[in-house]
Length: 124
Image 1 (tube, helix red, strand yellow):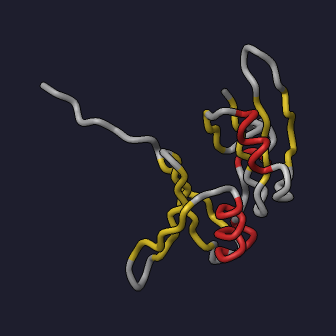
Image 2 (image 1 turned 180 degrees about the vertical axis):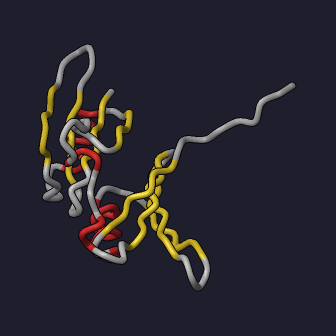
C-alpha cells in the first residue's frame, strides 16, 4: 500500500497584532494569504516550503512562545537554509538576531526573534 505524501508542517503562531506580524514576516520575504471564513480567519505567511499560520490572539496574554518557557528550547521553529546568504539578505532590515551567528564549515546557525517573541532558528 502506498503512503500519502506529507509536505512540511505548518506552524500556528498566536500573535498580539496580526497586521504588525504580517509586516514583520513580509520583511523576511514571506508572501501573504488570508485564509478562513467569516468566523475563523488567519493568515498564511509562506516562503518556499515554510508556512507560518498567524492567528490573532483574543487576549494578548495568551501569546507565550515555547522558547520563553522555562526548560523550553532556544527556538520555536527551525528552518534549514543557506545561513550566509540569509544573513546578507536580512542585514539591513533591522531584524533582531538573538543568538549567533555561529558560522563554520560544518553547520552554521543563527536565531532571530519576531515581534511576539517567537524565536526562529536558521541553520544549514
